[in-house]
Amino acid sequence: MNDRAKLLDRVQKLLAMAKHSASNENEASIALRRAESMMRKHDIQYAELTAQTINKDDMVAAETGESRNSSWVWNAGVVSLLSHKHVADQAKQRDKVLRHA
Image (cartoon, rainbow, N blue to C red):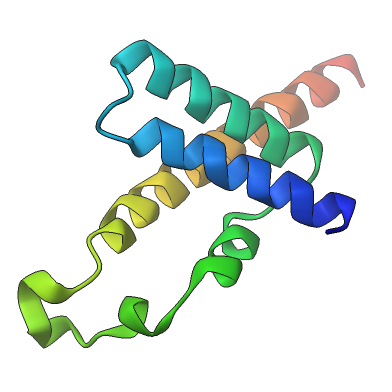
């Protein structure tokens, strides 16, 4: 396993810890922040993480109702959260640079 694969594995484990029902609110929050930090530091895109974990069950048609993989919904929420935060952080950084220019 190369270094990139190890990083991806670690981020996946942190995200799993963040959504695990046994994790309390504090543990879940810390795990999510660490995962986000690692993703930023190592330029890991959420699509890169999900590409490694996609299986046939993830592609069940929507009309199957409850048998659809419920983690897909949670993952979509995480992607949305991280994307919005990333865009906001980029805007803050851009504004900071423009003020000092």
